[in-house]
Picture 1 (cartoon, helix red, strand yellow):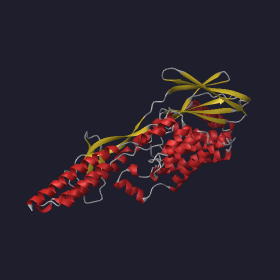
Picture 2 (tube, rainbow, N blue to C red):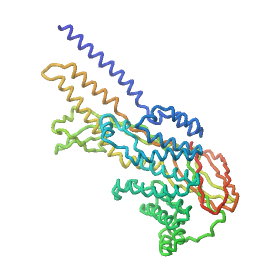
Picture 3 (cartoon, rainbow, N blue to C red):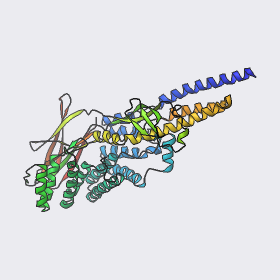
Picture 4 (cartoon, rainbow, N blue to C red):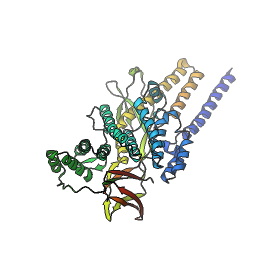
Length: 481
């Protein structure tokens, strides 16, 4: 009987060692980030091989999973846009819009987040990504000569802003509106000769900047063009008092110019690629204060996060819950190949002005919600640890070892190790920055050149022909590397 007992212990030991080795292998294999998992697609985009990029996307098993459908649709819409397939692009973006309207949160999805990790939940999109859907949809409609549909998209920017405002009760300092989207909205209204709504949109965009002491919004200074657009459209509407007030506020003396015979071209330059998410591991301990409340603290003691535990807190043995390894997402910026650019039209050089800094938006919005994210992750880990040690304690009761419970305890430990993973997903083919220039056109044929300069000072030039029709037109150009 003693020999049998020894054999059983030996078997359990070998099983545990084997499962630990297997678990470590699975853990290392499962640690690849989203960016690493779609690397071929990402590389094809950065080299402007959009046909291959679409093939890479369609055969990637990760992005094909139902939980990643929103990401798939946004990427498909982006690639179709880059290929000039504007109708097809909006088919995907409209489907993405429908998913967002229906809502991507459910009780079962929340349970997945509690039991596994947020990477296993349905991707719900970053707030700034939702605004960017409207940007590309509006451009697609304009290129398809569907002006009314583009105007509908302009109105939806306001609805998106209202949704964000409701989310944060309009009192939160977090990202709840998008100054660039409101600028775009004003441009779209202006292209439809609706100067009243154009003024309202430009004014709303300017007021977002003015709320900041340095007149910047997420890394973007207020463009001079926006200041001039506010005053110009105020004057066109006969709002002389408002025009004078904004001149004083902006500290400029605006002198209206004669409209160009050929109209104007709004040229958007989309440079670089959005930052990617990687995983960073932090270690926390569970502590109890004098009131009996539970908290997590990091090794340096700089972070103290409450543990909202639904069970009996008095029975939680903080000593048994050893140091917790928590995985969190972290953005890493991608350095664009081109460092600057300018426009040359009709022998005049026009500088680009930054309108949207997606890098800054990504970093700041993640930072704003990080404490909440940490609380969710740590609570999930602590609950798993408490369950693990409860089972292992039960296995050693009455001076005897219950092999089944002991194995279950180690299984919970292994499960906790394997399931811990940060959500490293994001819409990665968005540009890092969007800059714009407003170009006056002559009637008829115009040659417009974009002069690109890289970090080594080398210059490349691309020229397009634009027909000056007397109306406001749009063009976007992407350098995604």
